Length: 45
Image (cartoon, rainbow, N blue to C red; front, side, top):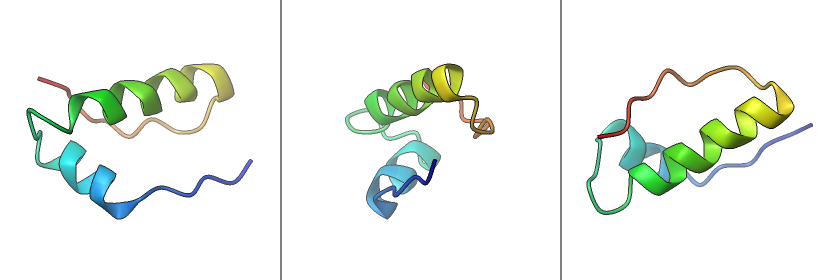
């Protein structure tokens, strides 16, 4: 399955943005658990 991600989401996650980083990180992590795509190794605050 192909994934297309908005770069802004990835930047918010990488910068641990408190307003915009946690929700996308949790969403991607939940999809990783469901579909098995590789982990992004991102910690949410």
